[in-house]
Image 1 (tube, rainbow, N blue to C red):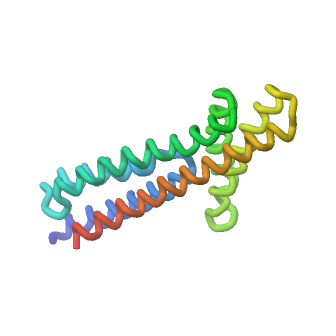
Image 2: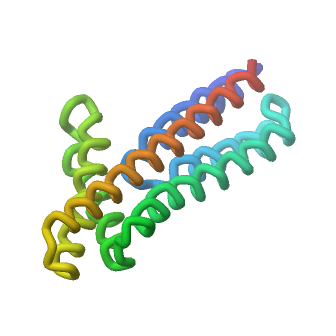
Length: 169
């Protein structure tokens, strides 16, 4: 392995690690990781990571992005959360994760995402139904869906890193 390839490998794992962390903030971390791997494979002419692994990573990326969406939206929809409440919960979840990210060594981002999702869904639901308990339930279901989606996507992001490490080693 040349010094250039060592540099590219280190850069790839830094990007992938940061991408997995970005999932907490509502970013498409697995997609960013996949693009980084694809560029790495093209530059290194598939010498370290093979095209079969790229195909597997593509499927995992699609699964992660769809899974996160389904966990969040499906649970909320089942509970009767409106489309407006779902949209605001997504935006407020991202804002919450950014605001609380500096706290608790980054764990605040997860707390902020869940709390922000709850607040967004709760706020719209209160205005729509005028029932606080019902709105709290909808906010809770939305927040748990967001947490499940984030954990699912983060797990797949970590699996993607493991696949790349195994290929390179």
